[in-house]
Image (cartoon, rainbow, N blue to C red; front, side, top):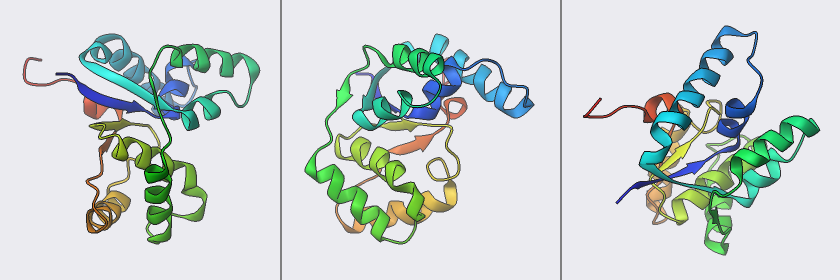
Length: 160
């Protein structure tokens, strides 16, 4: 059985954006494209309505490219349990106030027992300091958080 991956908005953004002049961003874009082309078939992908809402914002052409990339990826429903978990994560004090949508990404993936949340958001999502706090907190309320990582971390394996 394939592992399940929740694709967060930044991955679709890096996948479809024009090459950046910033060397680090350009490298992340290249890694994202490599993961998408080479490793994506190894996983079952999912998004939520929050991702679809976010990719549709901003520059019209860029939004269209992001939306097109998300087309066909199954949608995980935003359940009451996910909203309650996101509220609890925000109320724990381990996430900043502006990270509400990030908490929802984590909660939707966790409630639906997705294996990985794939993101380039290292400020609030793929952040070891924050995850070290919210993981144990989530366990106290009955949830085991999904594994949050970047595309680079989800590349390769035993056979590579």
